[in-house]
Each structure stands twice: as structure tokens, then as C-alpha cells.
Image (cartoon, rainbow, N blue to C red; front, side):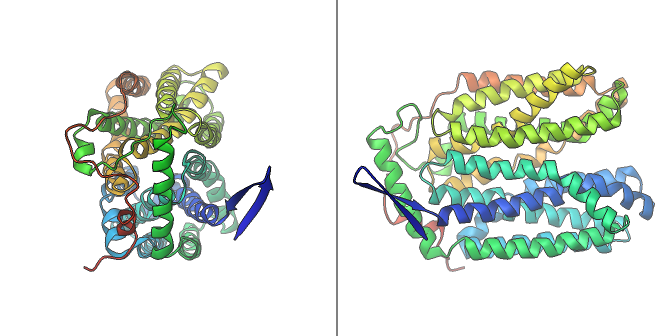
Length: 444
């Protein structure tokens, strides 16, 4: 479906199908984030109490969720190349639904562990990697669409706890019914996304058109302030540049800080005399700030180079972590929520856009998925913070460490410049046959 607007004798065609695809991916990411990372912490207390588990067992499940999400990053690219985007989304939705079912029927820790691991694998197969691959192919100007997409994750993080509390209230604190409902919801959301995402022929055609339009803009310097490569770098070529490792470090840093804050900030603030209710509200405000920050960052990314967004995001992430380490007044709590929320939200967006701008779209599936692998290591943040708490009696040094991590990466990004390919055979980004291979099913 298209809408045609005529102005000054020029015809502008607004294509609605890419935005429908974006909406479908946003729906899946919103529900997946709300039902996993945001809800598990709320429902886990009931599970631990009823099943007579230790909190160590409960914490292992949360760690497995994060580790499985990051550690399974190699799987979506392989599946997309072999069986296509729709089949990958189907398998991811099935894995997540089975994970929720496992959580709903568990009577021991091993099925609980299996459930969280399956949810992590399903999350990765339905979320950022396939969505980044498809959205990068169907949108020429990617800032706003990517900003909206990443915003849906922040919105899920904000809504998730409230959703969990509400549904648990309806089920009279029966957590098994809650998880089984999430399984049904995921099946429906996955089916909607699969129907709207488009077949391989349309995706291949759209990708070729996008590549040609982007190459034309680069050649004519339509947006000279924003660096966009005119060639498609291979993964090996990209991995040989220092810029890739700066972006990898930035992705690691935002996850390390974000997971540490999400898991330990309430306990830290309570220890510093802040009421638990206020601490929870501030954590929600942090997610809300990230929601708006990603939308604003996406809009700005089509006007200025995303590198500047990355620098601002890392700076405020360091400042927010430092404010949290000493937070006790409303001023410091506000600084923490604003800095960490904006920094966490915009860093991921900026890294994703820079990888596309620096290395091209053709091999971004493998390059971005390799970046996502660092999520498995980032899950150690709460463990490091817990060790610091046991060693020093408080969490202050843990959040100051987060500030140092973000600060060091900021310095590296400050000196980063776009990579330049020299002395190598370059593959033009507008070469027509190549986008097709990213979507057409390959024989096994």
C-alpha cells in the first residue's frame, strides 16, 4: 500500500510496507523484553518461595538468560543464511514459547535453568540480529527506524514489571499461569511478525533498491556530515580495524553497566537509606528516559554522525554510574536516572548504526552478530558487583567501576575516525546481485 503526495509538480511516494515490518519487529521486541528480563525479576520471588530454592539458584537462572542471549548470537546469522528470515523467526518464537512453558511447569531448578536458556536463545533469534538485518535492507535512512525499534526494547523494560504485577494479581499470584500466558502471547506475536516481514523475493528486491539508493547518495555527498562507506567490508576486513574493537567495547560497556544497574541498584540505594519504593520508581524512570532517548537519538542520527551520539551516550553513562555510586538525594537520583537511562539507550543505537555506516550492509549480519556475542561476557557484571559487595560491604565501588569502564571507552571513541580501506579489492555497495544472497534460501 502506498500513499502519493504531489507537491510542486514532484511526486513523493510514501511506502507503508517497511513501516509495517518495523511495527511487527517492535511488537516482538517489546513483548519479549517485557516478558523476560523485566518480568523474571518480579515473578522470581514467588518461584523461589514456592519451590524452596535458594536465591543462588534463582540468580543462576537470570545469569543463564543473559549468557544464552549473548552466547547464541552465532545462531541467527547461520539460520538466516540457510533457511531465511521467516524460518529463523519461527524457530526463535518456538524456542521462547518452549522456554516459557518450561518455566510454567518447573518443579526443580534444572527445568528452570532450561527455560531461561531457551528464552535467551529465542530472544536472540527473534530480536536484534534478524531485525537489524531486515531493517537495514529496507530503509535507506536508518536513524529513525532504528531509534523506534530500539525504543521498543526500552518501553518493554519500563512496562514489564507493571505487566508482571498486574497479571500476577489477576492470577492470584499463581506464577505458572503467568508463564503459560507469555508462551501463548509469544506464539501470536511471532506469527504476526512472520506474516508481515515479507518473503525472500520482496526482501531481496528491496535490499537491492536500498543499496543502489545509498550508493547514489554517498557518491553525490547528499549527507556529507555523516560518514557512510561506499563499499561492503568483509567480516575479516572489518575485524582487522581498530574501529571495530572500539565499537565492540562500547557495546560491551553499555551491557555491563546496564545489567549491573538493573540487578544491583535497588539493593545499593536501599543500603544508602533510599526507600525501596523510591529506588524502584527511579529504576523505572531510567527505562523511560532510555525509551525517549532512543527515539530522539534515531531522529538525530539522520542529521549528524552517530559517532557524536556515541560520545554523548558514553559520557552520560559514566556520569550516571558515578552519580548512582553516591546517590542519596533527589538531585543525585535524577542525575543517575537521566545519565544511565540516556547512556544505555543511545549507546546500543549508535553502535548499531556505526557498524552499518562503517562496514556496509552486505556482511552486517555476521559483523553485528559477532558484536552481540560480547553480551555473554557482560552478564558477569552482577557477579563482579556482588563480589565487591561481599568484599567491601557496599556496592559503591561496583558502580564507580562501571563509570571507569564507560569513561575509558569514551576516550577511545573520542579518537576514533571512520575506517578507510586501502590496498584491497573493494566490493561496490551497489552491486545488484549481492543483496539477494542474504535473503534467498541456500541449499543445505
